Image (cartoon, rainbow, N blue to C red; front, side, top):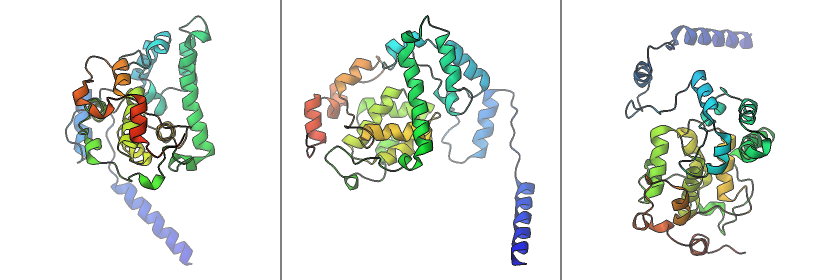
Length: 282
């Protein structure tokens, strides 16, 4: 009898919530009207400046048709290279990996020409399969840090200066502001920011992963979190680091790579390794 009464009360609560739930609008004359409506629904938006990424099926189709897979292979690591910008549409189910692969293959004479392009799609599939088989990997260290430090040596929370892009390291701050302003980052800059956060600032990768998940339009726990673990060295055989020379190699003219404005990065790999991992044994 008690069980029946509780069930009835649950049904009544569901009906009450359904009756009082506001139906959201989904038809708009233009993007500005959409932005204005979304801004009216939330009180945490600082302004009404939306990401330039357009989220609909036609936009996904247009982006897919515009890809240049052979150019991607040659220039993908450069911050102004021919990346596809397909990741938000793949993440939200507007495009499948199979669609993207087949479309890319139709744009080349042989698969070997775009091998690296296909490998990157395979990596995304690989992350998802790991997530499915080992969901505990997503928020827990797969292996110990290989930095000479224990996990307890890393801070739990992301500092405000990193979250706001006010670290004082010019190129890092620019990369962070791109994330905050657009909801997107080039993959290479994701690695730079992750490495700076974990290794220069000694913050747990989980804090950075949560931050990226909050802001990135294409973020999913598999690709995002396991990539952070790869940088941190808890899912790889060594920590990933970079230096200012590396940033200069791949950056474009709009990125501030001046030595005076990026002092903590301006050193050789040998020097940085000794500074960042003084306890690490070979």
